[in-house]
Image 1 (tube, rainbow, N blue to C red):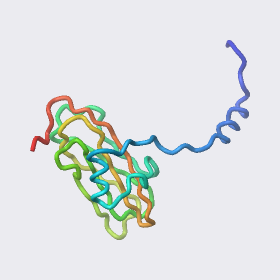
Image 2 (spheres, one colour):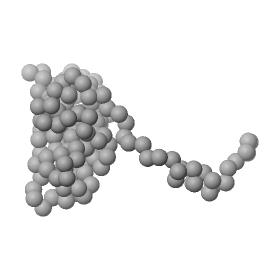
Image 3 (cartoon, helix red, strand yellow):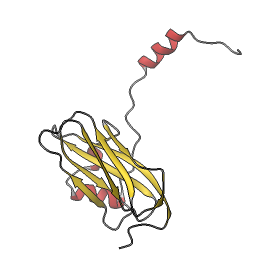
Image 4 (cartoon, rainbow, N blue to C red):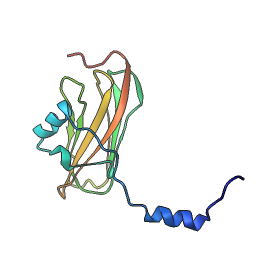
Length: 146
């Protein structure tokens, strides 16, 4: 063992004092910004990575049927939008859960024209908007040509 070591309590106390940092900043520009604007969502109001998970494969061999899954915690959700900014039609789907929905989980397959960051944005009942991005690299052509 080389070099000085810190006691476990010192390390844990330092971690506890570290301020919580929000999810990674997402550059909202171009088609994504326009799509959010069309949905009535201010891009700067979206809290990225807070209480929402978007799962997609890192590499999709074909963009014709890329599986994605959206998960939200117990917050009441009004609507969830799924966007693919590099597609011709950026808004892929808008999903409205039922009244009794608590925890939200939804999976579907989408078409992707090319490599891009797929985005999920959820409007919650309390007015907050949360979002998540998953980068998907499409290796063989795109599934969305028109």
